[in-house]
Image 1 (cartoon, rainbow, N blue to C red):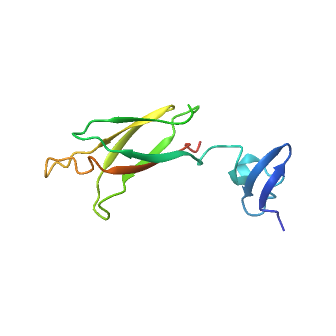
Image 2: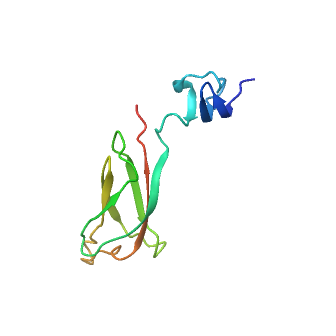
Image 3: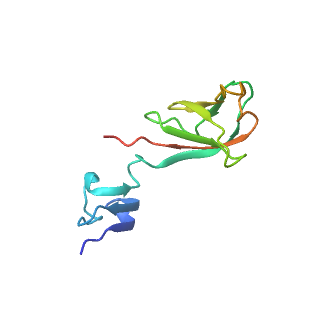
Length: 126
């Protein structure tokens, strides 16, 4: 039976590794792992909250670090659930811009002034 998870030391590095079925997490290659602490692909890099500005204006949110590639940023309003209050993001390696999306039927920005929760994950390389 394969050791599917290693929590602790693997070689000279401490962390968490989870292998695919039938692979030993202690000796598996990166392609045989489902999760590794040494690769940031798919990991949450940063998260937080931000107030959505009014009138479709953008607010800049800085990441705590500058990353080697542009992370995927997901954001959504925390208030008025279950009503959808759409926002958009435009990211780069050091941060992102967030803005409310205009409702073309009511000609308003329903998310403006609300608090949005966001998180950034590193893209999974293909």
